[in-house]
Image 1: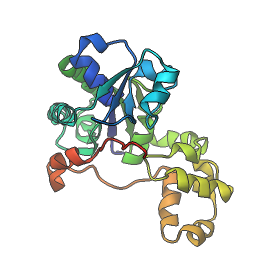
Image 2: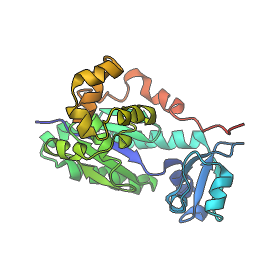
Image 3: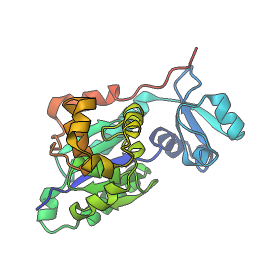
Image 4: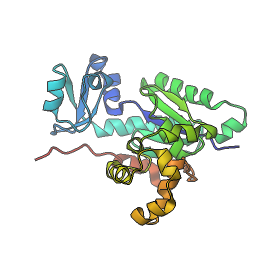
Length: 258
């Protein structure tokens, strides 16, 4: 059987943590900035509804959303909450790979082999998370990490999307290379692909490999695999490579522009 991989992506993580811990902020537009800084690290969904985005300055956010509330980021608080979330996830599987401070991969293949449905497992993760932390997450389910990562972005916030092996060609054929950020293709690389006439993951999957290797060297082979939704990398066990310690270094607040 195919592997069953989850990517759990916390929703507006820093802002949501602040809203859970301070009831006065709930339902209000909130932005998180590093202490002594004015660049938005994340925005609550209420602020996003006004057009506020990560990377804006506080003053830009204020123009778009006059009622926005600026909260200084508290990295220790977010790390502590992440570790609580990790402990919850470890009740489902020891294959929990920390991808960032607010994202984790889980391999739940062993549970599916015991006749638990993937979506039921994901719903239980989401239920427990909400019950024990007050937070919501979006979960992508797929046969590999790359596909699960993509699935986690399809329905946010509080979403759940399963992409089965047989669905990958259809899903990826229509997916713009601009939407492959976080799974191997950033903005600059996407721009280069567009310049070569490669506009979708489907294009990337079917373009002659020679075109990719001429322009990107050996990385061309990996790019084509991304276009096909292929990823053989395993989900690491939680305590491998001191992942827990790395959480504290996985995010830094953006600096103000001089």
